[in-house]
Image 1 (cartoon, rainbow, N blue to C red):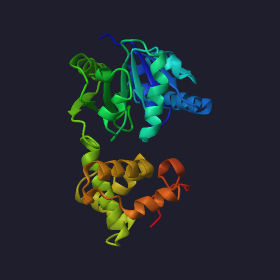
Image 2: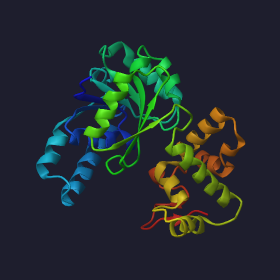
Image 3: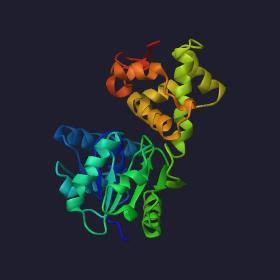
Length: 291
């Protein structure tokens, strides 16, 4: 399978990062969203991040210009469907993802590979709602995409070998490392990471430590680059909660029960950096713990 064009559904934090790395690696990219404002914001952010790489001498100004020239944007899913590889990077809600794939189906080329950037949802179940489960895979990038080196590749029960090999080659071409994961809730990274974050929230909820002491303890005591609550804010508390719910429901084990405090923050709309408040308040010059 020769992949030359890539369609990305969703221009948010993950979608624009994926567009960035594919365009820089030489792929022609079509990025879609339901909002022109979101698309404009995404292109501006890609420009900014590419310029940062130029300033650090990781790429040249010519490479930046070429990458930007390979990205086109659209409000039509039908435009995305005409690419060789489609990467769905919408919000972490299964109903939303299923609706996107159903809307794509009538417009897809026969050999187009479908993938989802989901961080936790069953690939087999998503694939079963399409006309090509053998050409469907989980393609989970880490955030921030231009920086993080890992890509999780998750086969559904019907995924064929040529599809898997094609995506392994793609991962190599964009300069990242592939890790193969079985199709179980949250795969590898989030199966380990999210319970740790959830336990940190429980530690806060039970008054064992405050936000600052919990984060400092993990940074200085376990050599983590970010504290777990700071990391949760960076990921998005709504995403953390969604993944914990998938783990809790999919594995039926009480150890994955989301902390009530995490639920409360999400209900309040305090989702972390993207809403300026989470376990830290980001509205001032420096982040301030909210508990």
